[in-house]
Length: 283
Ligand SMILES: [Zn+2]
Ligand SMILES: [Zn+2]
Ligand SMILES: [Zn+2]
Image 1 (cartoon, rainbow, N blue to C red):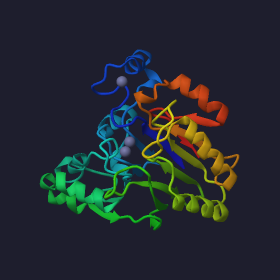
Image 2: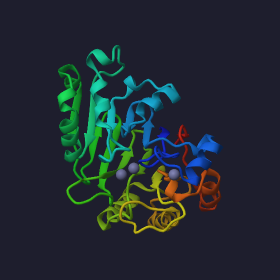
Image 3: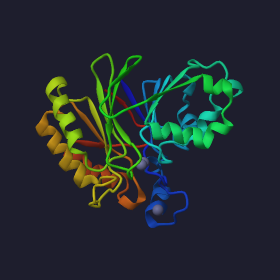
Image 4: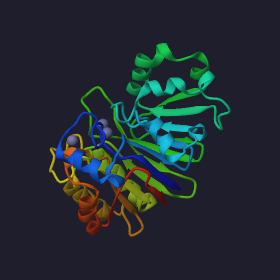
């Protein structure tokens, strides 16, 4: 399985759109891995996770052929993960000779409703016909093409929304936990982790919410480095993390303050990688 991080920032990007703080200025000065766009990842070339406002930039930066994307998985409807109007230029007169005309979209009901609320008026029939929406429910696994996907409830948004984190497996037995965005995991998610470790052994890769950087948080919406390390220890005890498991810190904000090199200094002794835009992993 090839896993590519396309965007690795929280909602405001880093440097943030309207910010003038020293951490944004320093990121801009240093450039390279300190420049972070909004959250998105790609598995192989056909499973896209999230559709942020920077999707088009990712296509340009990485030379992507997004017509190959057959499956779109949406974590939640925060703007840095879902910019619904982008989908109105998929199909019809807007995109020709696509590798896959059909797109299977997987998300919570609220996310689908939000899409039609803000973009329905702009959506042409030809585009609409090429999308198939699949409403997900917590812990109910779906099989789509070569992927088996289990949505887990995230600790992230106010009541009335249903944010998901995901467990994604392929036919070669590789598996990824994509845990964005989430604060400390709910008891039932820990129970799922325990069961998974027992039945399937360690996962191949985990991507952790590290938004708060050096800060301790209230754990309700995001996590920082210290909490990720504690969570990781507990996962190790459960057998969810084994010697081969690739652990990655991801989804960063200027409020977390540490720049790329400082993050690596703290993450490396814990056996964790630090994501950057364009990072590719073969797992
Ligand atoms: Zn986010
Ligand atoms: Zn800033
Ligand atoms: Zn969010």
